[in-house]
Length: 496
Ligand SMILES: Cc1ncc(COP(=O)(O)O)c(C=O)c1O
Image 1 (cartoon, helix red, strand yellow):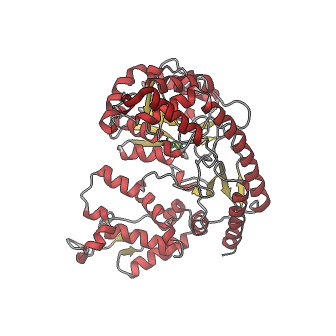
Image 2 (image 1 turned 120 degrees about the horizontal axis):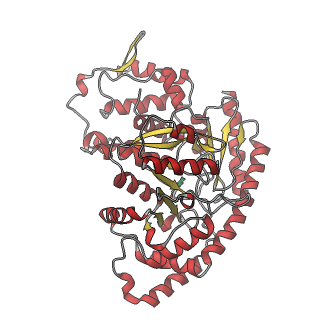
Image 3 (image 1 turned 30 degrees about the horizontal axis):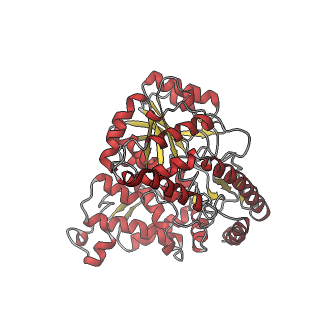
């Protein structure tokens, strides 16, 4: 079998837009050949059975067979009846190779990276879309952001503070911002936060990596949701943690499996308000059971509350942190979605005993977050602009979700089943009628449409085929153009 990271690398390779014109078997063949040339798959290494690889990549077994046959014909692999396929011994590859131009495009072989560095390369990292292209997920509307108000807040704090604002800041974050964050989440999310427990960071991704490095040792087990947010999975994998997937049903993660597990684990990672990617809300009794489990086992609950500001049906459930009297929960929030992705400000609300170690640990990474944006944001929040922006975006996004649902039911209902989320910035859709997820994603990308595949988010490799459709950053007219293109793509793929 491939390691998780190797499988991710094949997936990333076959989804690259520059390969869109190549047939899928050609892309699979190319990705595996590259791993052999780069020495990632060594001579003698068994390749996954074609059935298993086909399942993991959500493509047909014939497609994998075609890729393996070509690799065999070119001498890269051996096929032994009854025992499978293996990377061939290729003496001419040993100790060579590659002129400089090839080296640059194959850095894994040439650079002597650490295991973490190699993992980062193979995982493809976690990049958010740099421009809002339908239906890139998780992006807020930024075109109508009140930039003039933001600029005014920035001018005011610079004037108030003078050149003192240019000094290095508190590694834990500017106190005014910590206070504004604590006030906001206590009121809106039912948290129990105070300014002295808030650690201001650049993003939730930084909070996840900081937890992984500061709280755990390589080999420690952590329960993760299945399907899971890829950014968390990659941060944990890169730190050498042993991720144990636990299935999510219509009430969220199956807590009984955690409580009954023979596997001692140090933590559980959750997106309880709005599970990524399913959109499910974790039921209250499961939240309470998890809090007790964490207390009994001295385990941490890592709560990623990434987009709960946007809830469209009733009131959002209070966060787990607010239900936890034992201080076992690390609450993570971000302004990437509630304001704008370029801001690069997120935060963690920590149990008292973790404030010092986590703050010191972050100083080894980046010292502190940039000071002027922190003061500007504090003032933006104190003056009520954050609250009114959230209210305006909440009603805009609710309308856009309805518009997308109508478009999907009008034009795509033969091919996909939409799952209406109660909140957030994206909607999961399940592919029906056996459509090939990788093929649909690749064809969509070739048409300038970004879809995040669901099967790549399945931690156990047993996920449903489908994709996430971001809706918050796109006007109904923009979504309509893209949905019509998707309808054509799907009708074509249904017939091939
Ligand atoms: C579950 C989840 N957490 C966190 C983030 C990213 O937040 P940040 O930009 O603060 O890392 C995302 C972005 O899509 C997400 O989906």
